[in-house]
Image (cartoon, rainbow, N blue to C red; front, top):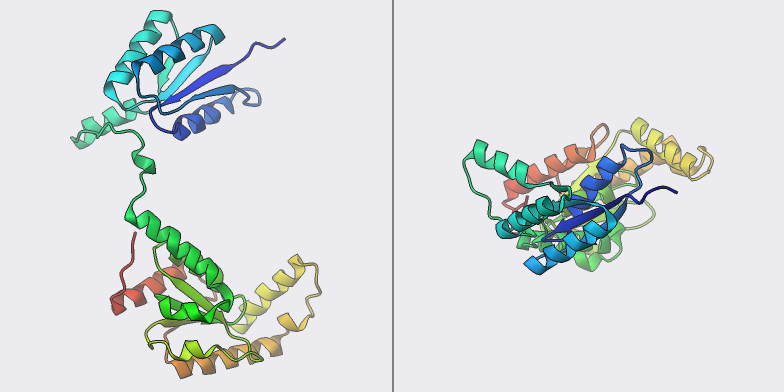
Amino acid sequence: MNERKVVYVVSDSVGETAELTVKAVAAQFNGGYVEIQHRSYVQKIEDIDDIITASMQSNSIIAYTIVIPFLKKYLDQRAREEGIIAIDLINPLMEAFVQKFKTDPKCEPGLMRKLDANYFRRVKAIEFAVKYDDGRDPQGLKRADIVLIGISRTSKTPLSIYLAHKGLNVANIPLVPEVAPPNELFELRRNVCVGLVITPDKLNEIRRERLKSLGLTAQANYANLDRILEELDYAEKIMKRLGCPVIDVSNKAVEETADLVLAILKKRGVGVYE
């Protein structure tokens, strides 16, 4: 019968960092299974005593991320007294920071998880992007920092989500020849919209791959070159009518396109939150 391999993951916060580190190390040993016992939000001496007792009974290792000085000191001391292996996963690197960068740590647990105004702004922006994706509700256009327009497969949705992570409210509208754009689009300020275009050959390639992934024939009208040219011509007319800047996304990653959009926003004086 195999001996239990137990590691106590101990933290004065959630303990996610310690758990991930333990799992990364365990993966190097024959399949990586260890039994992880969590002890989160350790704040008192009594908590440490309980962990030491439990560790002695299970003949385990303690892996910890404790930044409260008196708790760390007490855990180290008790582990030495009882002959328990206790590994500090965070303080050696903190000490290197102190030595190299000549600054002192706050020694405050949970700083990585503290939610600030920028975090909430991003969450709301992502919710906005999802709610007003693909022209679902034109009423949201008036509240958008930016409105992306373009035909299908011009990266409107991924670009919207990427920009939302910057704290921007982004809506997007698909341009389809048979469907008139919402009236709200033409009521926006001229500096709100950005058009996305792509070369016909590149779009034909993307749409063929899309059809293939769906198990459909590549000959469908969706990937037909004449249809693509018709859609692009229609989109160009709408963008000219709006007088909006246009970005060619043909050979650009989402990040590259986003940088161009952010540059446009910067010229307009729209704040971007990093």
